[in-house]
Image (cartoon, rainbow, N blue to C red; front, side, top):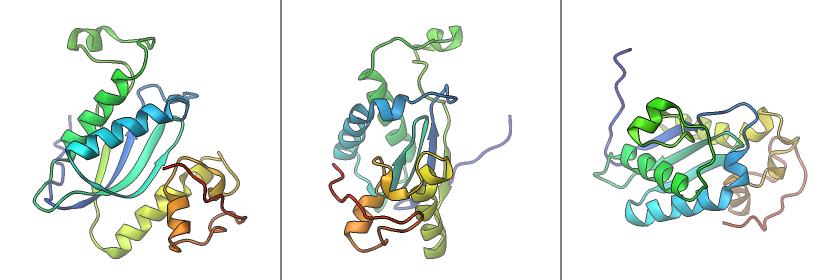
Amino acid sequence: MPDYRRAWHPGGTYFFTVNLLQRNGNDLLVRHIEPLRAAVREVRALHPFVIHAWVVLPDHLHCVIELPEGDADFALRWRLIKMKFSKLLPRNEHISEVRQRRGERGIWQRRYWEHLIRDERDFQAHVDYVHINPYKHGLVTRVVDWPHLTFHRQVALGVYPADWAGGGKADLSYPD
């Protein structure tokens, strides 16, 4: 196993990629978007963080979040989000013997990718990456057509034009 070290920076802004255990052809996250949103809301209420960008794709998600000053515990937040989301779903997934012994569900990959944002350029590159992802994966021909991302809020705030990465008019009625 590599000697991997996480970047713990109190008050830091991070980019994350979080994957389902079974990825190919799995649409669990978009099929159960409301339980995922509920889990995130509940964790944010207990352990606040700012969402700068977020996209939910069928089998994984990306986000850029900022932790409160003096707080570096993103691991707690991800553990709780994964756990709360999993508890809201019926137990019908395959669970390996190892996961069964540990009392785990077979929904999420255990690990996730995190990157500490270094500067404004790095921040914008990762926010753009989050928002371009549905287009990149061929899920839409225009970013504005994917319903599960913060791009719509950013358009409403004037940060992005509605025709960014694909063109067209934005539907700003995206439910938060």
